[in-house]
Image 1: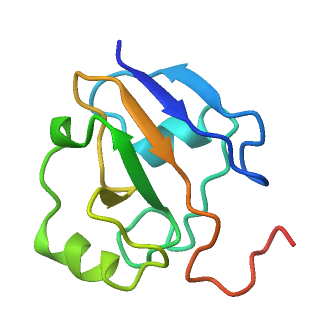
Image 2 (image 1 turned 30 degrees about the vertical axis):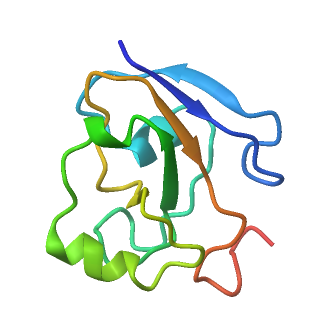
Length: 112
């Protein structure tokens, strides 16, 4: 099984995490099922950008984002060429290294 490494994030994953994930699992579901509370205000329906992540390693192993995801990503804070929506990007057969950006487009998080 591929390993997904979540880099340390001050609030969501302070120590970082390395988890094994079945291929075909979304990055968001992989994190959530392992206690990494990735924001997903639209309930993973590809209608917002709160689950925006940056793929530091393994980006090319992911299926290409569709036009709708690309349009949404244009609104994400801290957009990078390797940005994806965690609810849409599915783990393939290679290890990934994921950075959760410090901010999201949400000005107020329900956890605060």
